[in-house]
Length: 309
Image (cartoon, rainbow, N blue to C red; front, side):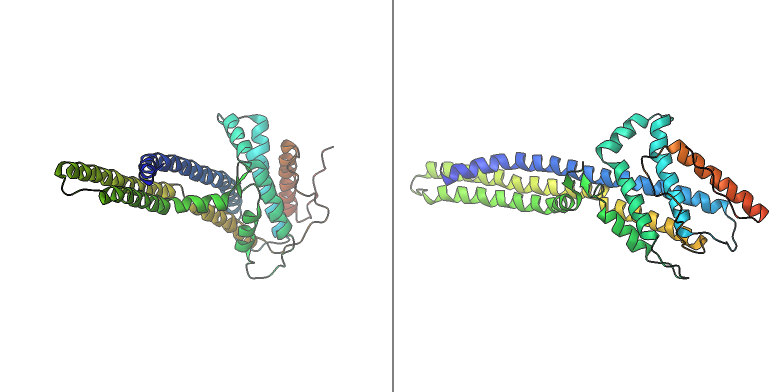
């Protein structure tokens, strides 16, 4: 195959190749965005329950309110109400589709990992009057989460997102490359042109101009794909969703820290168990909360609810 034929085949196939890469890049970007969005949903659910708790509280000094215990109770309630209880009761219309999405994007194990990791770090915080570095703890937890860092549990999110972010520039470069390859292939034919044969010279020049015009279209296609990819990347930005997810979670923990007056670790308390019966866990939490409110009104220490056998 001559260099001229190679240039022709290269220019003919380049727009189709860029089209395939464009579609694949759009799909990959959307999957990364959707994976991050599904996990941001759990942060929004946690923020909703923290806001509900804060709204029910009255300003004033508190006594024996542990930040760890409060965070653990609200995180467990968020998890059980968002996943396990929903899967059992099937009360909402889209539960089956949502459960399928949870399995594909590993949302449920990812949130369980996040709850465990957050609690493991919160229990070692030293109580001070200053707010601890909850932002760093939250960001570190999200970064280390193996379910959040891979699409479908296989494709690394960071590497795939960096590659997709390079596509707009690569489309422009590839289009310009196709144009130069077409020009280089056409210039070789001009070298054998005989100026004495005007008719043949005109035919060669006409073919050369046609090839140049077609080669220029690769640059146009590359620019169009680049603009489209820029718009798509802006609309479905996983970075924006990630910052929102971290900000929601960290702000919720800040509110709980301001409401607590210590960070004592209850040694008799059970560790978080994502496989626990959600109805039992939520019922026990409701009974304990009611007992504490009753004890607070009576001025006596609250007794723990009996464990279900």
